[in-house]
Length: 189
Length: 432
Image (cartoon, rainbow over all chains, first blue to last red; front, side, top):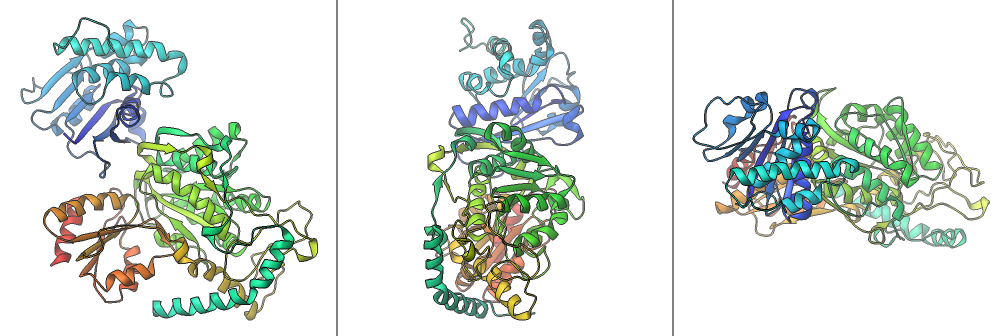
């Protein structure tokens, strides 16, 4: 696969754009890939359905927008409702387990669910939801390495919250490994 | 008003060389006295390494707007006056955020008219300066950009284009201000405009814009767009010692030979800094080399010829193009900015179908690459010009192709980039 298109979506305030920024930085700076990130602007980025798009490639990205995302991360009902039908057969759908009520079991898709908000609350603050989701995303897709993601965090999360954000990432990552039956013996790399 | 482009250039060359020959001795003499560089060629002008304070070296994942601000700081810009407007605001924010640590000054002005006025003042006070805006703000800046052209005041203005006219589409992309950049101010004048296709080029071309602006003492406009301004990609900022910067050239010679202007159709002339003790005058009126008003037809011819020819007569030195497989091509796609990336996708697909397609990406928009279009138009079946406007730069292509080949406009109103398929269809049709 030389080019992959990914959509991160949720409601404004969940850290959706930050998700795409972290992943894009990880890919472009530490995983030796080309990544182009575009995002929602205007009122939707501040409360309503919000989305950020990432095009990932082994070669220079020419067309900067996504045309047919293979991976959708939906952290809210509205985002799921709005975007799930874009996924092609065999596409990967990642939803927030407790915030998204599925319209079907999506037999044509690879469906994965993560209780990101609950895990974040267990870590002390639901602000970490996006990092739990990113850890999960990293574990269940082959887009980006966990190592690169962690290297990308400084500068994109406040220094004083770096440790707890890494913890949130690991939580999601481990859950993803467990769910997909990958090596779940040790700590996340 | 039809003029033969070749005729204009020939005349221009003659004018420029005459003047050049006539003033060479004086120029060298003054320069030696003043202890400033004597070079009249941009490529040979003295450069220095960037001031490390302004250079945030290393790889970044950054949007185009932020890269504009970083490019300015790397180039030595220490004064920014602007008024925030989507989609350029992030550039102002970045500059404002970095200004204290770099030792730069950021002022949020009351409006865009005042922004350019402040830049003109800052430039004559010795600062390299910039502002950013988009269409509605640029319209307000136009009057004072004319003053900057007339007073030969260096500055860099980035127009992060959004859909117009008027307030149009605040958050959506366009390339609709291409002609406004060139023909905005009244009266004959010439500016330089560059168009980046990525955040990386937003950085690189902003440094270049400052260098050109300092050398030719002219406003340089960066014509980018919402897509490039808002998209994040990898941007590598080189170490300071690898960034070449044209320093401000301030006159430092004896008082009686101090001249803020030299009308010889060339760049490379020193400015005079306010406060350095020299008496000089700066005005939008037609003036002599001391800067004092001389409102005659004869003097206007001298000044306007200089303003036009220092840019158009040096077009070969200024223009940068990115060409691919033009030799042997049946069709050449001429594009710029974000559209050139969309076009490459279409070009690749057309080549797979066996069509011989070349690509010419204009990095420099103004002065326009007249000579190259004339050459290409004599050899190809058609030139295809996709752009996110109702057809602007295509007019320049048509003018210079002058009927030698078909010119196909793939225009597209603002709000979104082209579907590559539309460009592919145009290439197919043009190749038949």
